[in-house]
Length: 164
Ligand SMILES: Cc1cc2nc3c(=O)[nH]c(=O)nc-3n(C[C@H](O)[C@H](O)[C@H](O)COP(=O)(O)O)c2cc1C
Image 1 (tube, rainbow, N blue to C red):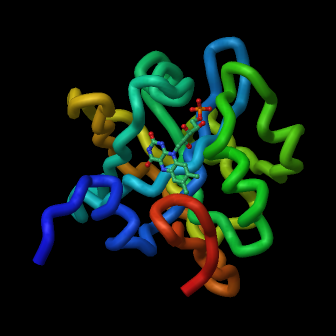
Image 2 (image 1 turned 45 degrees about the vertical axis):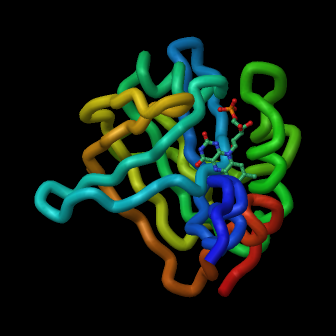
């Protein structure tokens, strides 16, 4: 075996799970970012974690508002979802620019993506520094699902989205 870098390892170990993470700022701005670094953490209580770069906009909103949605978006959204990973909510209204249809959550103010296989409503539990990222641990307060939708995964590292 040969020694490789972490980005080579990430390419080799894909496909990875994929989701759009939704936030709503105090001023009412709604935003979605692309996320592959998410994982289930606990069954009782139900919890999940997301690991976000410290450069992005979404982490700032999560730390202030204490909540976010995680949406396992469907195949039809693959192009819009990839675009959400290539620009920042600081500079652009991604929901309008990429035509993402949203719906209200039951327990949090962050929006959900209507065309999803699963939408999680999450409340922040704790934030942990991890190098150039921060790992956010959250309680899942509601889950909505549509079994007829196909889930997306990130291939070739984070270059391409497709179903498996
Ligand atoms: C397929 C894919 C997966 C991504 N996964 C993550 C991730 O897990 N964590 C992260 O911080 N950024 C991830 N990104 C990059 C962010 O989505 C990107 O930096 C985005 O511009 C941040 O948006 P924001 O500034 O509106 O929060 C991913 C991008 C793509 C295309």
